[in-house]
Image 1 (cartoon, rainbow, N blue to C red):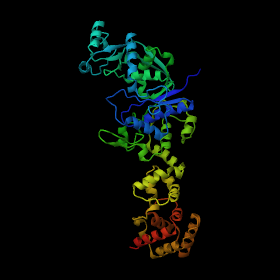
Image 2: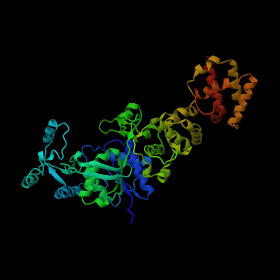
Image 3: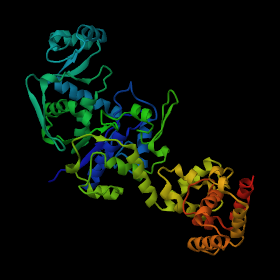
Image 4: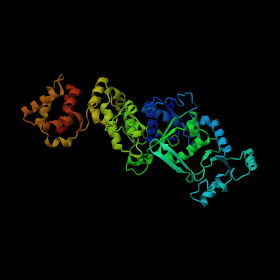
Length: 503
């Protein structure tokens, strides 16, 4: 019987959700959906010192915004719960004790002062094969000493006993055969003094309990792989160990190192999916959502960071990503983040979105600027007219405000040097003869015909006309604008602008 596909995204609730984390969730989700499997959200909150109030709900909100919806989670539990590691605390100690009993782990009673003293003498001190027999642990103490310390509730941690002179190898689905020298891996803590497991023990125990079939996680977790593989083996679970896939890093724009929040701050773009408010300081870190990205565009651009379908195609819906996704097409090399390319994705998605799907967001953006939308039908027409000019949702304000509010300022420098009373007369006459039941093409022909009669070249009138209606040298076709504004508004705007141009 073929093993059922079960994958998990397992973030720590410690702050904003980095776009690399969202991509990890996305690749897990795409793989699960491609193979009719289950996508799980598991919250890894064992490090209580780093736990941040509200961070779990924030993660859930980010996934919901992206449309990456878990089949099982703390909010939608299934048969493999609990889905928060802190609620599974009672299950981990037995595994630590089993490892100790089998000789694969040991109690370490070293105090923080003991460890600091070693680090002063040896700046690169590692607790492992070369140093463990000099420390205060159950390998150097007698059994009765260990029993006495445990009976006295002396604080301790449990450490894995890494073997000497071995190589731990595994096949990574993306990278092929990967091998580690155990002499270069220290004895990581598995169970902390507060009884909580570290990531190393918890992730293995939970993946086994939840019957995870494949593990997609970032490349930064590769150094931990030998510890996890040995734990699967030492706990007797080697036959049910998941397949591994370590995803390429998302790199800084220059390719030198992993993209961080500091890079975003320095270069002026977000690295979080949504706004994150630090509950202690109140500081807000901007996210892609609030900057004006559509979730479809955000998901699309993330998918293309380290993956492609083998063709030149770049625009994918979520359904198309599921259909096209394969591990074989994930790159080993890191992917440079390019914010200009990210905006290109958003521009393409805005262009192909219907006015109805953009209506709610655009209306709210205009309302924030106290711009009143009198007619929803008018708003839809405006959105359709200007959406090709918008990279971000916020661009709709600059690109459409003049449809709702008569300009108060004009690019006078572009008009006044060649302005004349004859031009004023031309525009007044054109507005009087404006046909409301016309088309943009017919309006343009009427405009050119009148220009010819008055002895003007149409080109020398087009720019003043645009500036009268819009205020500047931008916007869609000027006759499309005029037709949507209507005769009365056109007359008002022309008279107002003429009064200013005549001064």
